[in-house]
Length: 580
Image (tube, rainbow, N blue to C red; front, side, top):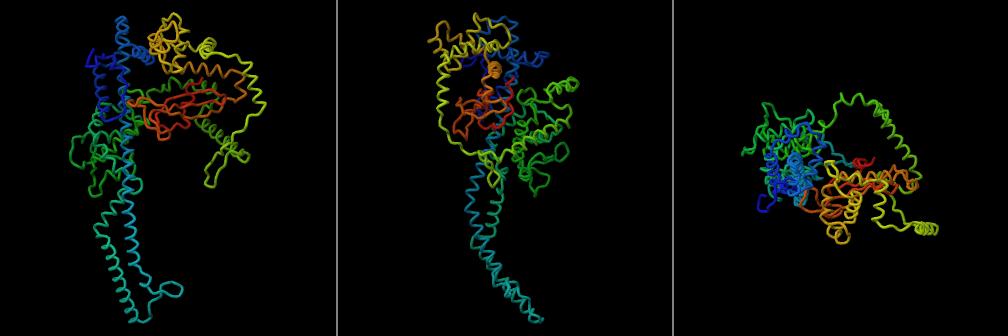
C-alpha cells in the first residue's frame, strides 16, 4: 500500500488518463516517468508474442491486489510484467493524445481570438475606407482635367505658350488636389496613425492566425518541452524536416532572446513543410537568417501534433502512435502469396490492373447514378449544383398492413428477453467468445448460464447489486468479477459478429434488403468529464462522446463504435471491421 489514499502500485498501473488540461499533462508526464522506472519491459518480454502480452495484461488489469496475491509467484510475475509493459505503452499513447488535444485547443483559441480582433477592427476598417474615399475624391476631382463632349480628356492647346499655360494650370490644380488629400488624411489623425492602422488590419487579413498562436503556448511551453524531451520520435518516411525543426527548437530551449539563427547543423533550416503564412510569421524581412523564437516554437508544436495524427511521425514504444511500417509483413514473406490472395478474392494482381478496375467501377457507378437521376423524384440538384433530398411525407398504414401485423402477432409466441437471449446463446454459441483474457479455462460451474445472465444485466443497464437482489442464486461480486475478468470490448464485438452472421443466414431478412447498403448515424452519449475521450459536441450540444452506428438495410446493427465528438464520422472505414 502506498500514499494517503492507501492504493497499491497496481491501481496506479491501471489508472486511465484524465482530460487534457495543463495540470493533467504534467501528471501524465510523471506517470510515464514512473512506469518507465519500473524496468525495461522490452528486455523482459523479448520474443513473447504481442497478442499473448495483451491477453496477460488484460487479465492482470481485471484483478485487484488481493486477488493477484492468490496466484503463484511465477504466474503473478508474468502477469505483472505484461501489465507494466502495456502501461508503459499506454502512458506514451495517452501523453501524445493529450499533447495533440492541447495543440488543437490552442489553435481553436487562436481562431476565436482572430474573429474577436476582426470584430474589433470592423469600425477601424470602415473609418479607413471613408478616409480613402475622401482622398480619392480630392486627388482626382472631376474638374481637374477638362473633358470633351464624349467624356474623354480634352487635348492640350496647339500653341507652345498656350500649352505651357495649360500645363502650369494643371500642375497648380494637382498641387491643390494633393494638399486637399493631405488635409483629409490629417483630419483623421496623422500619416503615422494611418500607417499604424493599416499595419494592424493587414497583420490579420485573410486567415492569418499564425501570428497569434505563440502567446497561447506560453503556459504550456515548459510541459511540452519536457514531453518532447521524454518521448522518442522517429520519422516514418525520409522526410525529417519536422523532427529537424524540433531538434532546432530544443537546442534553443533555454534561449531568452527574441530571435534565433535559422542554421541547423550548419545549414539553413528547411521550413518547406509549413504553410506560407507560418513561414512569413516566423521570419522577419528586416532580420534575414533569423527566426522569431516564440513563433517558431509554436510552429514546431503545431506541425508535430499534425504529423503525429497523420502517421508521418511515430513514437517509439507506443501503440497508437507507433510506426505503422513496422507492423507490415516483409515482402519476402507475403510476396509469393499475393497471386493466391488475388485469385481467391477476385482482385487484380498488378497495380495497373487494380487501378483500372477501381476506375471502371467508379465510372460504371457514376453512369448508373446519372442515368437514374431523371426518374429520381426525391433528389434535386439546384442551380448551384448542390444536391438536396426532398422531405418525404409519411403515408398512412393500409388496412392490409394492419391485418398482416395482427396475424404476425397472433402467430408469434410471447417470449421474455432473458429467454430470447438464452435461445440465441444456445443456437449461435456466442457465449463461447467470453472467458479470461489469457485464454485459460473460465473455471465457472455453469459458464453458459453465467455469461448469459451477465450479458442480460449489462444489456439492460442494471447494476450488479440490483441484479443480485432480484435474481436468486447469483451475487453482485460474481457478476462484477465475470464482467471485469471475462468480458472485454473485443470479445463482445466477436460475439456480435456471430449474431450478425447468423441473422444474415435467415430467409426473412432478404425480403428487406440484400445487405449491400447501410444507414449511418451517431448518437451523443454522456460520459465522465475527466477522461481523454470526452469533448463538447457542437452538433448535439452535450458533453461526452459519439456512439456511431451502421444499420444494415436488413435491419440489424452491423457496427457500433465510440468516437470523440470532434471526429468526422461520415463514411468511416471501420464500418467493415467487425463483420465476417
